[in-house]
Length: 146
Image (cartoon, rainbow, N blue to C red; front, side, top):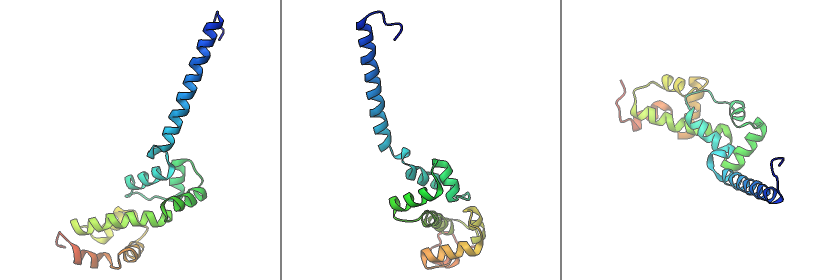
């Protein structure tokens, strides 16, 4: 503003600033609707990309800069399921693929998908599918077991 020698230059600068502000607001509104700016979408993307790592609600909350409690509530509202249920569902889908198309043992799959123990993996898998991993493999395997 100090460089503006005339009232016309000041008016032009004012219009330029208003246009820049309007453009910034429009970009912010557009970014709000972009899927990767939604924290829940970001969480879902993170889970998919890091399925083979241990993922906790705290880790996820830190990724999207929200409190774990708020993220948990919002995740459930937006997806219709809890964070743990969603995570386990994604892991079971991956485990089913590994059981059908590889010769990995259920222990190897358990480790690969970062389950806390074999028994936990089997319990989660059975709850989701009605079958143990071995029963599932026997029924659906494309690759014969060793």
